[in-house]
Amino acid sequence: MGKRDDTSHEPVEKIIELRLPSKLGYERVAMDTASSLARRMGFHEDRVEALKTAISEAVTNAIEHGNQHDAAMKVVVLLTARDDELIISVADQGRKILDQG
Image 1: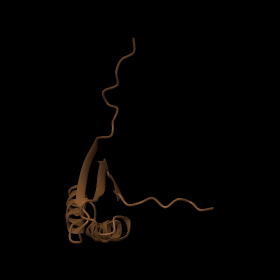
Image 2: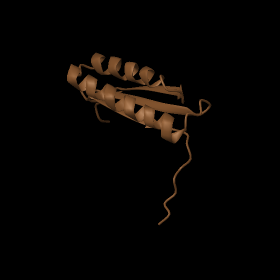
Image 3: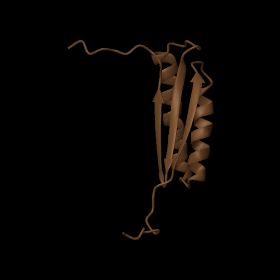
Image 4: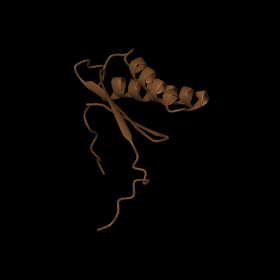
């Protein structure tokens, strides 16, 4: 029977899910959450500012273009922190555009 290697490093993953109404102003919730997490992870301030801009644009686009300002539809922001990596996804509930080709 093999001996377990207790020195192996399994990545620790933390996931935060935000479900926001499609109303302008709620992009700030995503910005604040993401920037706070990035700072806690040790990101440099210039990267935090770039992250805030990117997430604000993505959530605003989801509100305006994806969900067409329908407050009943949600924008889902998923923040996945893994070691020194932060993965962010933004999804809306708007209609899917089918390939017409």
